[in-house]
Length: 373
Image 1 (cartoon, one colour):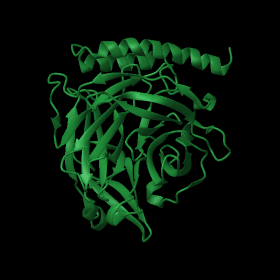
Image 2 (cartoon, one colour):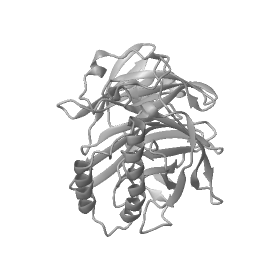
Image 3 (cartoon, helix red, strand yellow):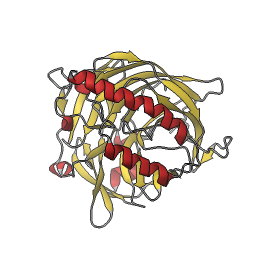
Image 4 (spheres, one colour):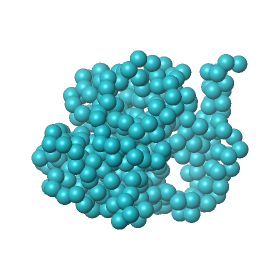
């Protein structure tokens, strides 16, 4: 049996069991401690629960099914969460062994097409569709393909494939430029995008030396190219967990005037998982906290344009915070677009880590009173 066949066989078994476990984990009677114990047991006993080898992936269409979710399982009519309005969400699954691991997300200006980046070294593009109530109902016209090195082949080394964040630097999905951040081999790479498909890497963004000093799995995570407002053209980068002794998380602002260190106050032991430009010229920061004793938590903080432009030490306004008593998972990707009423819409995606007990969730919120910002 060749390497491709062996991998496909193992991962198909994983996906098959995945469906059963996702069903079981919807039963809230299973405690987080029980689920965590099973995760550790299965991942420790059987190495097939791992990222797929995307060296063997070729561009293709895949089917993705969607199951609607409510953020508050006990109150399905609840819409207000923190300072955000819940617009709906779905749990996504696919028979493709390459589907999953999404840690970066970009939305087009129409709010109907997404491009997702997986830390396995692949990407998907898809159209969103909505129900009669206006809530997101699923995705279709899904294409999946490998991220390609300058030689037009998938990245050979596993350490080169760990993509974590993405931002649309210029243009649009028809003809534009994406920046993608990678950890392990820390770098920010430039990828053209044509008709929703990511083309081979064309270069690298020069980074300050301080941005390269990270532990393997806590490196460059979120990035945002600001395309409006007083910070237009600036690139904001944050590491997942690069903390100084005084409890500030480190980031960098790259502009035409040079590079400036950003320091975000660490609150509650959260790590940064992604960053997105906000239409007013500020940014949103997506954060995650995980402890085996308490499960998963998620938070969104907002940094306003003036603070980002003029301050080194930043706090940010908390827009949303939730623990796993709500219907969340390992939320890792965030993007923002304006709807037809010029209201800011936040879209989140979760990274299932190709793990049997986790899900790929896609959810949306509205920022109230954001029209015209």
